[in-house]
Image (cartoon, rainbow, N blue to C red; front, side):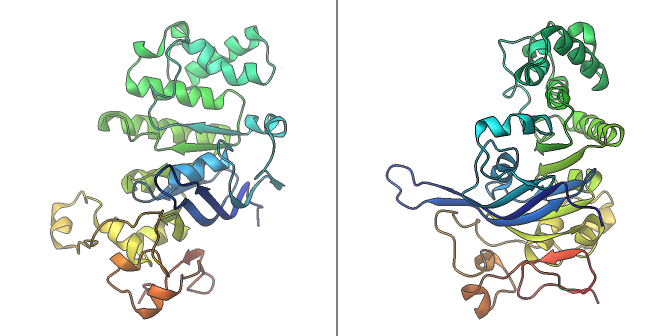
Length: 324
């Protein structure tokens, strides 16, 4: 069995309470998953569940409060700035809003070249590499001296992807990379990322709330709720037979292309809003909204575990759905 490229174990992230709010916020609460070389793992869930915070910890824009993040066999959880510098070649990030993530005062050439210059590359070599990457992501190299505002949203995201590829990374954390784009452009960016994955042997952690996009691009899916992973496994198993009540509710809200199927399928409506991470409920975090909650759910947090022997899927639920 191939060793994982990335291994995340019991990672937590707690932010201190702000002025006037004493309670700290546990944005991520014991997250565990692996990403294999060349694999795309989708991380999905409602807004505010901790997906982006998890991604930022993996590329070490944030330092985890507890737990371990192991990349290629090395624990990178608490590396200092100097030790992280060579690691930046292998770990890169694509952000949600392409224009906000690009410096408006820099040319595209400088934006793409910056990671190489930070690693000690020459200005001439970095510009040549930037031209190559512009062509690789479907843009015109002659536009290197333009500024971000001269490009559309989809083109700007291509620039962000090109920047992430500058140092030849092995793992890219893509944080909602298509959610800020027009529907007509999303498929183009998704197709580009898939092509780059095949050609360059990339692995992705693909963070999203659009389950249709995740189904299109990912090999496996991890479902997150209030800072915890509640279900993780093969895409076809999770989508075809969701075991956690929260996963079932999310999938029931995804529009179906067949109107007849849309009319007859069961819609699951969750009651209320997600609890605040500053005051999470005891036991299972999902129990206040769960139609299957019982006494044990209110007092004991379920452990992420395999419910069917030999199945490559884990569920954190006391009463998971089982295939008949």
